[in-house]
Length: 229
Image (tube, rainbow, N blue to C red):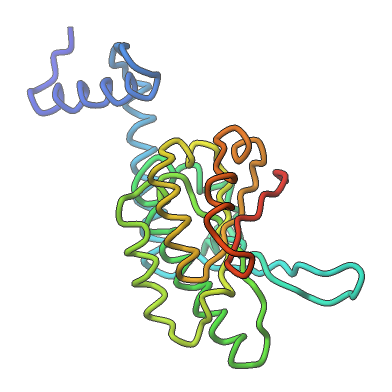
């Protein structure tokens, strides 16, 4: 039996409940000291990543998309990196899985959209009308206020043409609520923003392409289905 004080007991119970939820439904989990250390370290890492966002340590690199026939740059893909002051440049696999476990991924996603649109505006002013692709996490896409947030970010960058922004949906889990996803895609198309689905199987299995493709004339933005990298 745990002989700790009441506050510690409640914290331990909360940690055990979190672990049970992570394992799936209808499960229980007993607290142990090693789990306490893991949870504490997890919270510290998450807090450090939140600080990195606040202190502008995150940055975007842009990978050119080149037409192999003309050898011309036709677009850019925004790649998220963390310029850690002690550990140097870190790739997304070092920190995004952690962020995706909390609402922090939404804050990071909104920052990426804001920064990408700022860059689109700068390039457009310099005469470079490249389409910039931005990855959208499932948790961010599933939020009820996704469209409102996107419209608000767009409004902050009047010099960035909306049709130069492409949203990439990489996770099949983002397509679970079909009515929600359908509404987002139609709203994005109304704004001129294109949608790219990297998971080709998700597009076909949900039957998403048929109803939407039939509702729009040829000159409207379309959904681009692409094989996963």
